[in-house]
Length: 192
Image 1 (cartoon, rainbow, N blue to C red):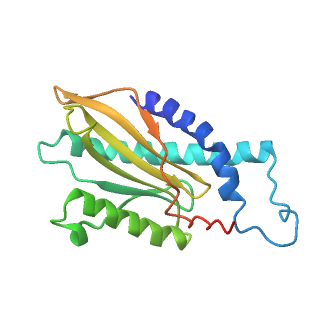
Image 2: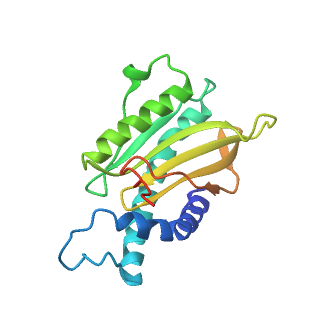
């Protein structure tokens, strides 16, 4: 089950390699070995492997925890997880009291704002929000969305169709969608 998601997540990283080199060049010192803003292909590959491994760790832990929500007969509500700055510890973002009674879309907005605040303080390396919905308005296909972002410049939405069969979840092939990089850094305004 997780094998399919790991391969799909790995494919996501190749799509974001160019975006990562741009976002990693932001905020470089004016003098020193990094002043030219250039990252070798070898350095970039190492950075992407680190981000990939950490996002896989985060996605596996979050998806494992969230499966009980999917299997519950109640309407599925969004939930959020963080990979702490040690690169190992995964914690659920617990804002249950603050978001109680809110519709799902409002909860997602609150989670995004909370991640933006925590990420910019340097407390986390990656974050993910998981929620379910329909593939589109006219569809009966249920999907799990994993909205994720990593400090090293990788972000995306993983959309995975699923069916609940006899208390188990059967996963479809995941699809990756681009997502703006928003939680860790603001995009630079184009002055030209």
